[in-house]
Length: 222
Image 1 (cartoon, one colour):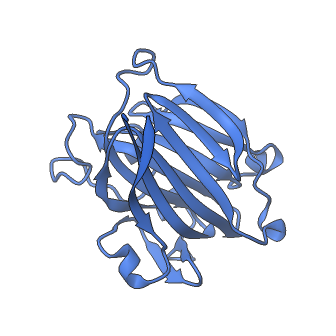
Image 2 (tube, rainbow, N blue to C red):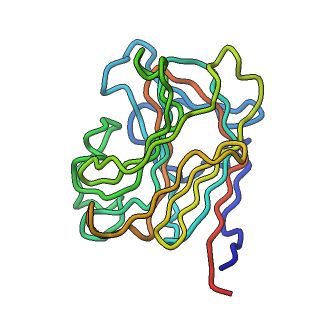
């Protein structure tokens, strides 16, 4: 298989997020990249977190690249991919339950998705032993884990390049080309393997982070 570029977004201006779908109170700005944070600094409970979806639906075998810089913690950053309604409909289908960024709406409701948390600095226990976690939902199934090399905010002085690859139901994750984990979805243990679907970014308040140079490649048969 070879990969071809099917989506490219520098994330540097308002037009770059036109059509993106907010769930929760997302505040965005631009500073040599897309800066994302909770829009209500007084609200820090479980309902303060948010998800920001790309409007496009992407094929099953893809590779997602983006540059990431943490600006303020504590918090947590996550990416959803392969997201669809439980019956195969779009995650934006009006028949699905309304979502406002509250996490159980994504992992134990009426959508299926893979979700990868890669900057888990929300709680003291996470900061003491940092890992990246892959889960599959609906059902909040724990699939894979690897050590997180991303530094805390005070030591982060540049963008870090993140890459998620899903090819023939094998999911791998790298940061600055360092392999973090690899996991094969056998389509049995946690239900059928997920295929095409939407991509979304999520943060837990009061996290503030910057995103840049988002690219999606499709793996195709030569």
